[in-house]
Length: 415
Image (tube, rainbow, N blue to C red):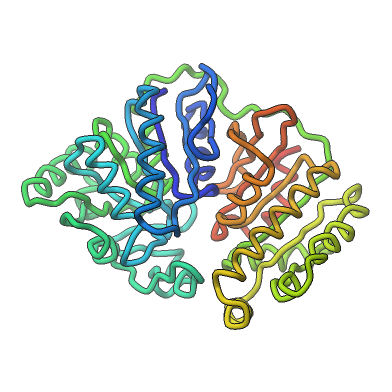
């Protein structure tokens, strides 16, 4: 294997794998550390963890376990995949995990770059922009678990690190790989351990990719992966081919991001069959999930159907104040995972899942251990195919990703 990746959530893992496939790397995404061989026709493995919002010590332990497996399979470079909106708190988890991986690899320097311009994530002068606004003015300001109130990533990262954080400025990135390497040498001489890297275009990502060729560890969002395949001798074998799926279609959405809220509204506005899942009703009655499945099953032949807990920030705050944030989130995760399993049992083999936490819960509920990565739907979101006795086509969408028509477009791409 050429590239070994550790992702801090499921949709982020798929996002990364998608960019590697686009670069010609035959890629498999695993659900947690693999328990069985994956085959020989693989250039890159992305180990998907659910470590973004757990306590930092647990995130470090899980990441080191994934690293150990990747090292046993002689991966030439390690990639720690973080969120494109740098989701974290002053306690972690990006800084602690990065430093733990550096120690395990004997690595004295790495970069951290969440930029993915195709998805509207750019970094300039160390500040992260979501579309045209700074991170702290975007919808991430009110994220229920990791509210991002500061766009200065050097400052955000430094609060999580024991070592020193720095910056590879756009002026160096734009001048190409040699200038980036020179800046890295100067930062290392100044005692910097991890540097935020600016990037506002795919050309910048390609420059970074070439400059990072010999770096043992790369910490980044999925965008930097666009620039890495050029560093490896690839076979040229087709990387995106998946068998065609012909079963029922469904969508399960637990994300409350602005993008997903717009996608749900678009689907409903255009006549899609949709049912909201209310956490308050879930808390009051165990039959709410059964009722949702009873509603959905007769509609599957004409599908797709959508079952969602997506809500506005005000509605989310009201629910959290009534149930508690932790309990509300767990109720939704468990319910949507059970619903997804029920839909698959009813004949669904084309399933879109929106939201990182929701995707993780659904994949675990379905007992899926690995996914082959296929065609891209929108930047950062490909179709995947589960590896196992009964293949299921899955699109695992980060809450912030995808155009307004994503829920409709996804099934069109698969056909």
